[in-house]
Length: 358
Ligand code: ZN
Ligand code: ZN
Image 1: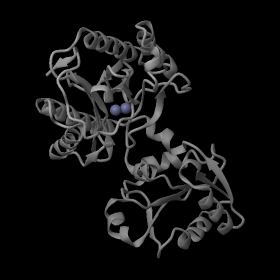
Image 2: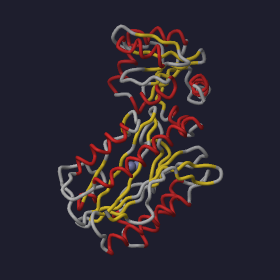
Image 3: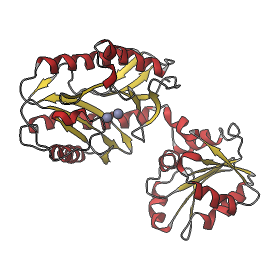
Image 4: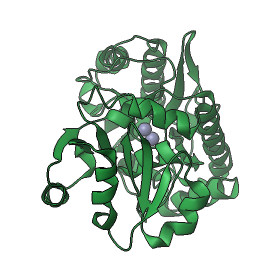
C-alpha cells in the first residue's frame, strides 16, 4: 500500500478513537505513514488529510521523502506551528499517542491547545502496521537474507582466542557490506557461560574450546528488520550440548507448527514451552516465544504466556525458544516466520538442523 493509502486507512480509524484529529509522534509510525526517516517529525491526521511537521534541519529530506502529506517546517519547535495546524482541522478532540509522549509534553500541549481536549490513544497506527503488504514482506525477506549470509560467513571466524565483541563488530560490518542500511539492533554474541545471559552485551571474553556461542542479530533494509539467532559450539560438542540443542530445536518446530491465522498467541507460546517443560528446563526459558518484526524490531503481536493477541494472515513473527543454564551456557534458535493462509513460512534459510561443531 502506498503512503496515501496508509494515511487514508489511519484517518478512517479516527471515529473509532473518538477523536477528530490525531497527533502522531512515534517516529516509526511517522515513517510508516509518510516515508520520513529522521530523528524529528510529527504528523497531524484529520479528515482533511495529513500534515507532516519537522524542523529546518529536515527541510530537504522531508521534501524528498514525505509522501501523501502536506509539509510544514517550524522555526524551532513543534509548538510554533501546531496550534494553527490543529486549528485548521477544527478538531475539538485531539488524539495523542500515549506511549510516545512524556507527561511534561502532554501538559505543555494541553496548556497550549485551549478548547481542544487531548485523548490518549494506544496502538492505533501500530495495529495498521501489523499486517505486512507484499512490498513490506519483500523488504523483510531481503533483510533476512543478509542476516543469513552474514551467519554463513561468520562461522569460519569463530575460533578460540577471538572475542565476542570482535564477532559482534564483524557481523555488523558484514551485513552493511552486503547492503543493509543498518543493523536492526546491536548484535548479541554470548560465549561459554555468558551465552546463558538472555540479554547479554558482547564482552571482551575470548572464545575457548568447547564454548557454546550464541549469536542474535539482524539487518535493516529500507527500515525493515530481520532477527535471527543461531547457537554453535567451538570444538566437538558434548552429549549434553547436543541433547539440549535438540530440545530447543523441537520446541521451535512445535511453535512454528502451531502458527496459523486465528491462532491464540499464548497457545503458540505454550506449544513450544511444553517441549522445554517436558525436558525439565521450563524454568530457564524465561522469556516469550517471539514477537512481530517490521519497521520496529519488536512489535505486535507477541508470543507470551499472558499474550491476548490473535495471529493474522500477513503477520511476520519470530519464533525463538531457548534454554539457559548457568555455567553450562545458553542455546536459542530464532527464525522469522510469515503467517499465511496456508500456514507458516519460515523466511530464514540458515542451517539449524543440528548443533554445528566448528
Ligand atoms: Zn533476536
Ligand atoms: Zn527476537
